[in-house]
Image (cartoon, rainbow, N blue to C red; front, side, top):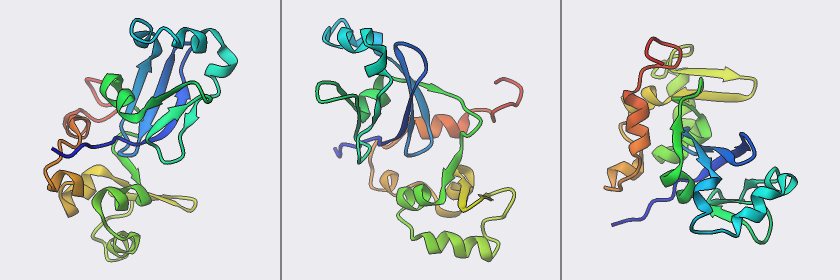
Length: 172
């Protein structure tokens, strides 16, 4: 079985013991650091130093998060033990992220936009210099991301997000 990493795109602090991570596929999860204390009591020191806790950042390649030379967590720890949270941005991907996930060239998506295959306003939108595309449009036009095609247990969160009601609609 292939091992899949759920790369972290951004990380933030919610309160004095909770983080929120956005993953490369657009899914956001909160992670309560208190769950680590029974098995890794050394994290008490991190939680007691609010200035250090606030310095959390994504490790360069997205395979984890770090605070300093002593404290870090892997991306899959956050993924597996975090709680998926809905956001107003669920289902939106930067074109660059979509091309990486689907194994496409960015020019392929730009041509799809110019030819009307991906419709401006409903499938894609431009914010300044950044284009975003909906996950539903990518699934409709290109199928599942490349990782799913090779049989990886890639992302139960992706399917859960696709089946969930839209943000702001009844039931949310």
